[in-house]
Amino acid sequence: MLRSLYSGISGLRAHQTMLDVTGNNIANVNTAGFKASSTEFQDTLSQLTQGAGAPQADTGGTNPAQVGLGVRVAAVSTNFSQGSSQTTGRGTDMMISGEGFFITGKGGQQFYTRAGAFDMDAAGRLVSPDGGILQGWSAVNGAVNVGGAVGPITLSPNTTAPAVATSRSSLEGNLPSDAAVGTSVERQVKVYGADGASRSLTLTFSRTAAGWDVAGADANGASGMSSLTFANGALTSGGTMAVGGITVDMSSVTGFAGMNSLTVSNQNGSAAGKLESFTLGGDGSLIGSFSNGSKQVLARVALARFTNPGGLEKAGGSTYVATASSGAAQVGSPGDPGIGTLASGALEMSNVDLSQEFTNLIVAQRGFQANARIITTSDEVLQELSNLKR
Image (cartoon, rainbow, N blue to C red; front, side):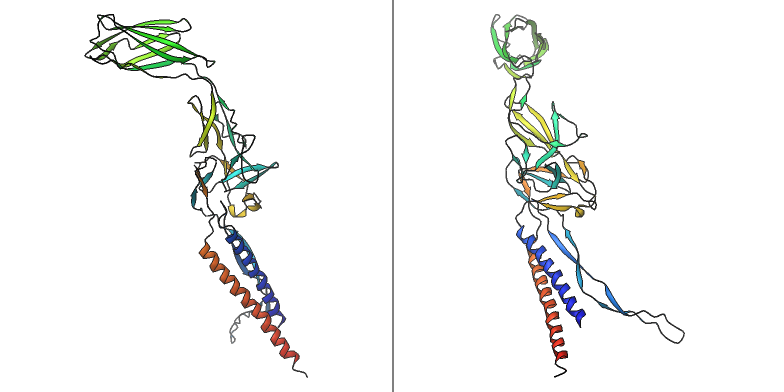
């Protein structure tokens, strides 16, 4: 009689835990990166009232008779299935498509999370809402060493792209073949030194009986000469010219009649630039765009994966810590096998299925009621026993 009472109590406790887990899932239905949990039950030890008997020559075997002593919560398992994508449009929001985890550092300890809502703090670091600093590899001169130790990713607004000295300039368009001898066409090219200082390179095209003579004069005093000849509008000689270490490419210039459209198409130098914005690549690279028009890799986000993600321990703030059951974190780059890729401007939504959770609420509620009925029924039987003697 007392066994049924304690079995009922164990059922109440187990179904109360199921209600707690289900309630927590529903409470976090809109928590970015949240992973739903489920409750798994198992029976407790059973009391043996009759042992099993082996069959004899004239007697059949008998099965054991056991009375169960209740139920207990065997595990609360986490479902790490992929959540849906929620577009935010914020460049610092990131979503993992795959099995990886972001690595954050806080108070000298590493945490792991699927929530990619990061912001920039005053030190230029990408941080989670609870202050965890996103970890990865910082670039040195645009190169990232993914084999090194991970550290805080810092994107200071004062990051500067170095100046690039001009070594090549290109022209395109047409020089009129019907221009009178002695006609002059001048073009100015803005070029840069290694210190980022700009200067002018003047290119003067003079019409001759054979074609066009080109004279280049650099503001630093350098000069150069070349001659262009054409046949049926196509350049036949004189496609390049060197002026003070700068190669002027004129191979795309044509010489048809009636049109003067000569322009400077590009030059490869630039002044120093200041960081203006950054974008996230699928491989986790944070690519900075600078005021001088250049782009440069600033850092790469690191991701971690685990042999047994279900063994991770929840640490609050949508984070996890590694345990002996989860195994050590295997750190890699987005795009590596088994880790996944990154998308910018989106967050992973909670994977809570409300229809399933409300069904679980009903199941837990009915289970709780049934176990409460066990206790009241046992109490009524005990009352009948006490009434046997009056």
